[in-house]
Length: 145
Length: 145
Image (cartoon, rainbow over all chains, first blue to last red; front, side, top):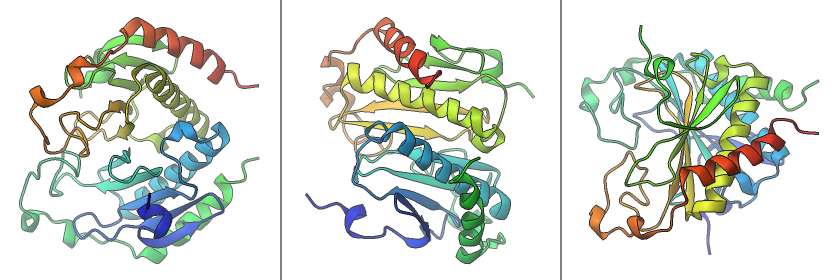
C-alpha cells in the first residue's frame, strides 16, 4: 500500500537526521504549524524502540521550544493520530486565544470566523528562523552528555 | 486561579507515582480512553525538565502498550492540548475503524451514528486489567537498566 509520508516530504523541510524530519505545514490559519515525521514507516510510537521513541520526542519538544521562543503562542498543542496516514508523525501547533478554533482543537468545530481572528496580524517568524532554532536545539538534544 | 486537575483526580485512578497519575476516563463512546496527568501544575511539556518529560512520555507509552495489548484497537491516538485546562495532561485513546468519529479525531465531526458503531460490542477489559498491566509495564519503564 502506498503511504503519503513514505513517498513525499509532507511539507517544507526544516530539519532532518537519519531517523526523522521536521516539516513546515504552511497552514494560513495556523502559522508556525510543524510536523515531526519518523523516516521509517511505523504505525505507532510503541512500534519504535524505546531509544527511537525518546529521540522522536526530543525532536517534538525541540519544535515546541523553537515555536514558543519565536511564535510566542498562548498554548502549544501536540498530537499523534495517524488515523488517515498511519505512519508515525506528530503535529506541533502554536495556538492563540483568538485563533479560529480556540479552545477547541484545530480538528474541532470552528469557533469564530477566520476574518475575526487576528492570526494574520501576528508577527510570525520565517521558516528559516525556525529551521535555525531547531538546528541549534537539536545539536544539543541529540547528543546529551 | 483554580485548576480542575490540581483539585480533582480527573478520572478513576489506574496508577500513580510521585510525579504523575494515569486515570480511566470512562467515556462510553471510547472505552479504554485513559489520561496521563502530571502532578505538578505545569502548562507545557517544555516547562518540565528533560528528565521529567522523558518520565511523562514513558508513562504515556506504557498506557499505549497496555491498551494495544488489552483493547487491540485499530489505532492509538495521543494528544496533549491543554487549551481548556492548561495543566499538562495526555489523552491516550484506542480508536477503531467503525468508532463514531474515525478517521477524524474524537474532537472532530462525528462520522456515523453511535448506534451504528460496534464499539459497545467489543470486548473491553476492565479498569483493573489495565491498571495491572500498567503496574507491570511501569515497574520496568521507570527503572531502566
